[in-house]
Length: 149
Image (cartoon, rainbow, N blue to C red; front, side, top):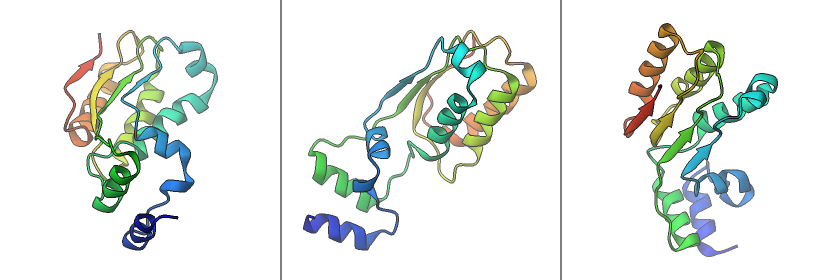
């Protein structure tokens, strides 16, 4: 292991960058496009859980200095990216939106999301939209676009 890795490991107890390939890959993603996946969301609860896991722990607005330094050292071209999340056309239920809102609100830091597309989800009612706007307002300070058409 490199000297930088040992310095980084001693600087932060949260660094497991080499051991978690999935989280490493998430750092490079700019868009998660799950539009028109209604049959999957309707039948498999794990699809909603997957989205919630990403929203609850990924794409923080703040990244610790040791991790950012390590990523710049490893990739030579590390650049912070905002997430665009497309969940359009999935007929998400009020329960699923509630679970997604819970995942967002349970975050300790804000999420770096620039776009959220929830159009053609006809089951989103007024109460559900109110909860969604509260979560977005609290946890998505860099959101530039939200589509609920």
